[in-house]
Length: 117
Image (cartoon, rainbow, N blue to C red; front, side):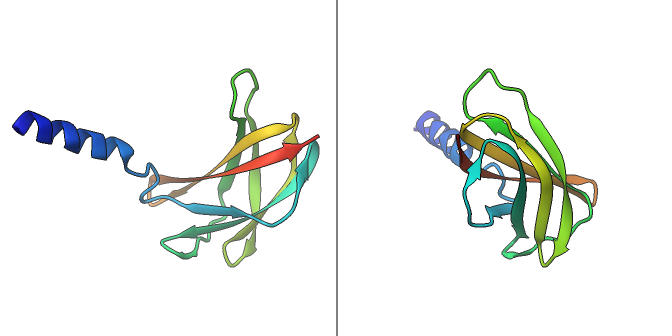
């Protein structure tokens, strides 16, 4: 019985959200296509706008074989940010990871999007 309980607890811990203390990220509505594009983001922490002057973005495709694309975001106020000329160099499914440091801790959040040809 103890063994089963331990296995269940381990399974539940593995299924917990990885960014429980992290950032919630949403993209401004719109379509993204291949090329250098401005990306507009809204970032929240605990349901409130997250403000920082040092927000970084990293883009990866959901399949192997493509390098990472990165950029820095400029604060627009109210938890909104703009990344200029982000290089969507291939069409398909992307994951954008946003990261910032607060009080020595790295906070992250992700958002998925499709990039059209």
